[in-house]
Image (cartoon, rainbow, N blue to C red; front, side):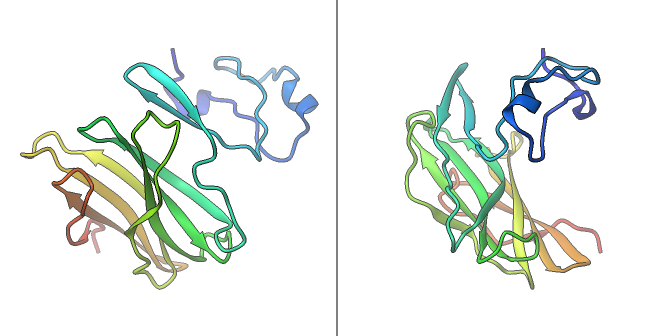
Length: 178
């Protein structure tokens, strides 16, 4: 059983030593968790009730120091599409960024090359991709939601639809109510 509310989770974060992370937490109200090393991020994917742990799918580089806010969708052929925000030149929330994706055909054990799903169309960046398969369309479309950040106080939500299993996405549709 998983916690039903995020507030029930107790995930250690910040810069702590492994010894500090392994001490019991009297405030913990959910399932006991093993220590987490914050600098190591692994991708856990559940496919057909089997779990596969892959390597760091998007390793940071000097040119792209941050990848974050990702989403996964299982395609009809069984492959997995994993999209994320690729920050360019800085790890700041306000740095230039675009949305990229990689596909896996073996349950997340290996990944194909990156491809761009959404170039930066914002004054600052695009970020925070989320996939949603729409059940009441024929064929069942994949919606890709993302944020367009134009300035520190101008942020819009957009959606693009794919009817060809994420091979392409249609024109952006503004979701935010102005």
